[in-house]
Length: 284
Image (cartoon, rainbow, N blue to C red; front, side, top):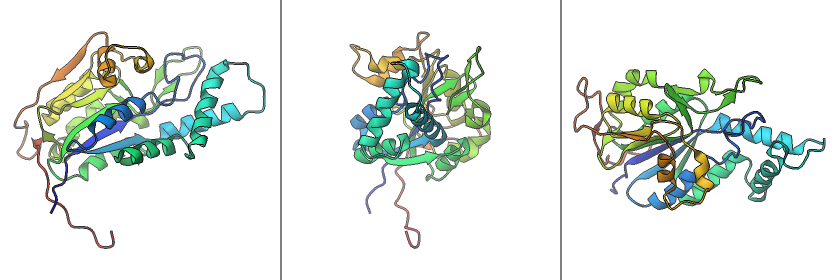
């Protein structure tokens, strides 16, 4: 039987709706897709099964809001509320025969030959990891909004005039829940010092350190804000993920991994394994 490649899981958070009072966040729906698309092109066929797990509610909401705005009958001033770029985005999706932004992401995944899954809630992330064989997950990446206490899978804002960017509790993977996942998730993660779990989000270093402490795998994260705008800027750094790392003005934190995880036996990560093929379920 052929060997099964280790699983590389990329959790892709989403944008919020565009709000005129915030010109710093999510000016385009593709902030978190383009970097992963470019990086995946380089990694396909190099020994890992790549999984894109996309947070559906964020992309569904952004699509519905963009479509409603650019389809409104009332006249819009040129450039108002990013009308031109949002209309171009909607038109491009339709031209590509995609149903919406999620449909377009699925097209990208299919063209690259990677596994695609839509997550409807944070618990879907944990349940997905629990479904893998022990020691078969080579690494986990995240890209999207974040703060010191967790990963913000969908952005929202407080009412104007404050217009503070935030996330609702039901859209956050909290750092505080990692300890409760030690036994169920730790054993799914394989240890490979050459394959770090990376968290591309603002101030994600604390989450990365907690992931390292609990699961004993190598991790990396941002010590300050990340500027996703560098993706579209001219740069001598050709690697787009490295550009994101360098955009964290306070630096990029790395945490080394241990050969044996702390805690009770079987509670932490395993040396990376290539699991034996599993028999197909009846009817599959």
